Length: 424
Image 1 (tube, rainbow, N blue to C red):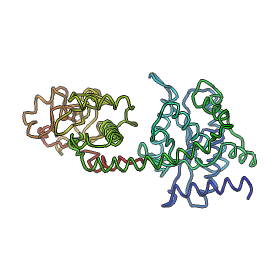
Image 2 (cartoon, rainbow, N blue to C red; image 1 turned 135 degrees about the vertical axis):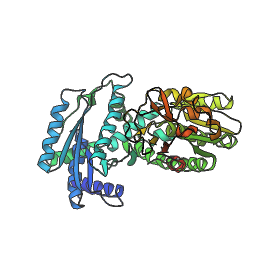
Image 3 (cartoon, rainbow, N blue to C red; image 1 turned 180 degrees about the vertical axis):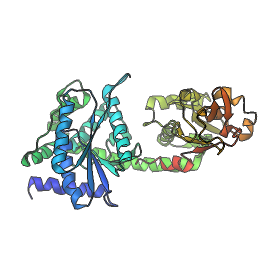
Image 4 (tube, rainbow, N blue to C red; image 1 turned 90 degrees about the vertical axis):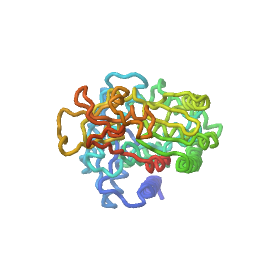
């Protein structure tokens, strides 16, 4: 078997393993124009046709480099030659602090996820290779990462309501480039891939220096694979703990105080991190230092805010609620999603009223709910709940005993809290 045939065979096995239930009607592929994603596009084009699957490509122009438009134009031309549909999405950085590269990456995933849902794309394939995996492991080693960090990139996962596939994680970049060259297909070179200001580029150079010591991309990728198994075992233990000691009411998580304290440290931290992510709707749990501060507050029985959440400690139970201050700017209409967790349904006589608005109940609104104590829910939990307003007038507070015909529908329940402990 030639090198080119081996690449096709290995890829075919990898993508079929990621789609054991069969290929979707439409499979998306993210293509930047670089060698990895270009090879992925061609390999998928060969395989998808044999599986009766329609392929559709998508590219994101982040507006950070003037060359990007021409590179995406090259992708569009290649797609036309292959008979593959192609769409270009655009993002502009705008105002915002922090790491621009990280902001661009997060925006890229959200844009592609929206695109996939709109076009009924069953899954989206990404062009990360074994080299990318090794660089990720090395970067996370440098940051002192634990099991989750060292498990690096998963072959598949669910995020933003979309299934993401990485069928190239077992293949080297050099082999893919040789395969493209054998087919007479070129690719774009992003100059940032040689810019030593970026940590990933420095790690790429470091890998070459580490090779004589026996530290290879294949070895680092194998370490990531073992960490995936370890992480899965820890998540299963955390899920059992969640099932045993956590209850969900009004969007808040109630934790048995004594049972939580009795958990092994690693499982307790994982459960707290998951609860914070679940209540806040954040993409990631807080960093370890922040979790340490939360645990210290629980030991001292002191209220603590973190990750857009409020922890109310108690001798019998701890309550993790959404923090009201994080919700003050949120606005929606009855029937729309509020805070990613609630949908307030209006009665027939109020449906379609253009003046009504769903906003935070808050302490001020709670003052107009004389029966809130009968709910048995802590005051801060209710203060962070959705309410219906007509200007400054409170119309309804469904969770605080003042529904007035309106009801609050939870989009995620206790079963979801427990099930979502596991990585997808």
